[in-house]
Length: 303
Ligand SMILES: [Zn+2]
Image 1 (cartoon, protein in one colour):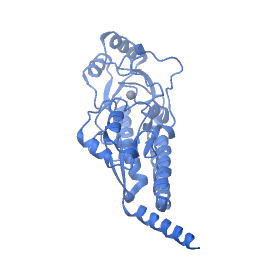
Image 2: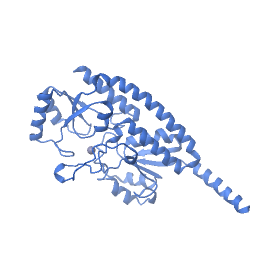
Image 3: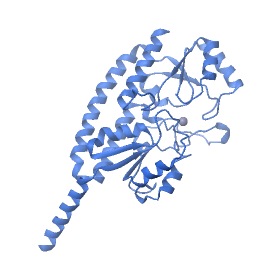
Image 4: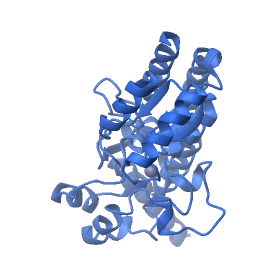
């Protein structure tokens, strides 16, 4: 009996001490940080390492990132090797056992998402910077945002069982708001489904699949390889032949080649945002799609 009382006391104590402090969440990207904030509400403190206007493949390590990771209870990563050039060394160097790749405080969001472009043949260096586990830009389908948010809800509940009902309610609210937003996006994009576009990098397969864009080629000859004259000439020929009038460019790429291609083909160059924070007003996951969908509609309408 005494033992039981003691156990009850211990579990009450653990539950209250768990509920006391906010969970310290660090996300590799702003998009994951935004999804975490949706679910975690005021029970978490969340920061992201990469800025939304930076190329998430290449992030320069700073001492402040190590400090962030040292204090983290949970690290959210995109995975699929997107951050392979910069996140693994930060994780090792921060020395925080909670967020090491095999620890329970390391959350790989790709495990919860629908992944496209999974290579079916052997990867060689000649293919460029191909991600062998599939395309890591998967957060650009709101349905994947929903799946990731669900995964975050489960993880937060596991870490803070006393707040499970709160996270569940936050997830439900997010889910409803997202369903309404997606209905709006579908209505806006409906007249333009099937439109052909060229994109700079392979950042948009999930977005294109969700919203009915037809990505016919890339400014990069191969993923991660800068544009060169031979591919650019072929690209111009193809765009003229197939009457492709839109080139989508991520904000961190040089506009020189896209602008040159646009001059030759009469196409429009559109800087579409792949991440929250790509522009000042794009402060969360909803505003990211609001911005991109509105910009696409405006572009297609003007052609
Ligand atoms: Zn990429």
